[in-house]
Image (cartoon, protein in one colour):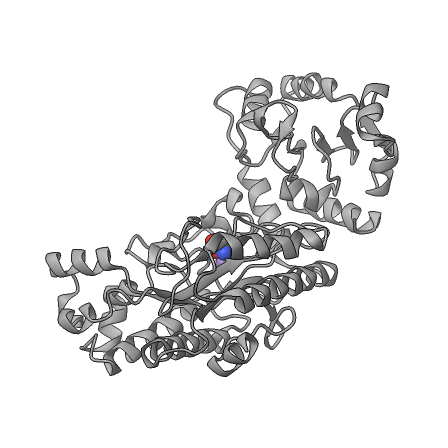
Length: 455
Ligand code: GLY
Ligand code: MN
């Protein structure tokens, strides 16, 4: 974990954003697969990790904004636990390592919160995303409890700006993610299965005593944006897309995407679309700067895609009008990227309108509505850059039948690409005072680099 002062400073900064009452931070419990003692790998809540740092189940923390007292609620291990799991530091010792000297039994939490509610002081909670935490908060605050907007805004403000310590963790996460990707690039060959590659990608993370930061996407159907099916065998002529990342030791996330041909070399058609997608990616990277709205980064990539598609005879008409109409979403129906941190979609549990839009309304247009981060970039933001080009036959057929954005397409030319699949590159970047920096060691991304890695 980070030094105690890091967590104490974060809690102190949080206090400066809020007026009074209690902050209740719920840690996560174990998550059973099929019976209580057979559990999924434990993942602590990210805001709990950020302010409290304790990576164990069944904890809660209460920060008293008026007295300045912080308390961890949790139970010391019994001899039964120690027989089962071995000796462990006491909760008192663990709390001391994150700068908190008060611990109380977990069973005292409800009474402590009830006393605060009875006294009329506010209790600030974040939106729960696990049912057990939601039920426990509802039992304490009433079924109609509302998450605290003041707390949400304060946490977003703090967690959005990554400190040097956090950036070092993110670099470790991205370095591991690059290793996971290079392993996959070397393996992608006719006859290998998606499942074998997904297993190797996970093996690289687990062998480093780390974990993937989200379920691995390893697919020959890259046009399906979040495709967790691993049942295909790679064959000559396919493209293979990997979207995978690893966690750092302190659970910061890496998130990268790569696309390679299953054959040793790209075909001319594959190279044409690959180079266009890489050009959109490089344009997006070049647009990232402090003060620039990430919406502009999104549209810089989309513009390259529209111009490229016009060059291929697939699109036509005025580029600005096509972009305003959302015609590019035929190929790029998602956003250019998202915040990255302790979560792969950082702070998504706190609400996209606060994390990505600073309270501004979001577009409802197909494509643009999926942009998770549109607000002005600030030094210290870490985000993904991941424009892609996807040929989605069902979307082609739908727009053609509806004549949707028909003035911008030659649907017959477009149909020639219907079985192409999808391509995405993804890198993780830090916004700096004067531009941006790609985090981690370099990931092969040009055609030449990819063909060289694959040998
Ligand atoms: N790489 C997973 C995602 O961005 O959703
Ligand atoms: Mn991503």
